[in-house]
Amino acid sequence: MSHDSYRALYIHIPFCVSRCNYCDFTTQALDSASPVIDEYVEQLVLQIRKKAKEGELSKIDTVYIGGGTPSYIGSSRLSMLLYTLSLSLRLEPDVECSMEANPESIDERLIRDIWALGVNRLSIGVQSFDDDVLAILGRAHSGLDAQRAIEYAQERLDNISVDLIAGIPGQSVESFAKSVQKAIDLGVKHISVYPLTIEPHTPFYKQVMRGELPEVDEDDQARHMEIAEKLLVEQGFERYEVASYAKPGYVCKHNCAYWTGLPYLGLGRSAATMTQNASRRMRIQDGQVTDDLNKAQMYAEDIMLRMRMSAGVADTLVAQAADELPQIYEVLASLEDRGFIEHTDNAWRPTELGWLCGNELYGDIFDLAP
Image (tube, rainbow, N blue to C red; front, side, top):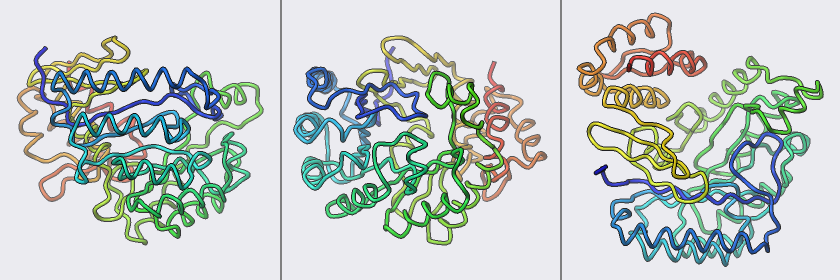
């Protein structure tokens, strides 16, 4: 179908030094010298060139290299990938170019090389600064490794994000609070706090089934998320999305593209592409259509995703959606009565309770569409 221009590009690197106990992403633990990685990167380079020739990269204003662990594949492969990107699209300083990295594979050379070739935002998978908690997660780095990695990155990059996990079995409130405070003290500009989810087919899931690991305590997770918000807001961070905090000027443009319905192109194994026009939205993964939405479903999804963000849903968008979703005002009123959302400054915004009860909030909105 004819479609709107892609605005965001996601590139998937599905390789890691080892798989963590909670991970259910499309990743593979391989020796870093494996020719499989070389072949994969070469194919990505060809895909990028092909899409550039087709004119699909001309409007891209945010790039995200995720995984897996992109930093694990090393400077030479990343340099080839980034050089191809620089020739294939406008990779200027105003284009956010993010890359995920894990502490054990960050060194001064890697930072120097990726910075020189256009990466201007680094997202570091720290998860915790507590070595005992890192051992539970099966991470390949220590708390000190994480601190050093951040310090290496700060020699070249200003825009650094850290991921932390809340509600890990065996993780005390004190341990979690210290990790949040450590990230603040190290001067990072963006922090994402994700409650642990135990997915089927992961080592954690098998341990829970065998009774070797307690199930996730949602009350603990809620307590940790409240602690994170208190500490971060006090230090000048804005909670702009349910799991994301940023200093002014450091909101992640790429993630916001997903939450505000901008079309995105995914390259690499299991990377999703979202293609749309005025009346249809499709998501495609590994050549298979995973979503095919009509206009009403598009509006419902847009409103649902915007409820992840503190800015919420503008009255103008709700008014536009009402023709396709005639019960929208009734549902919003119900959500307001239950304390999940509030109406302020010409927008419907999620409350803290709404974020904590996200399945109900998001489900009620998406169910509006037939």
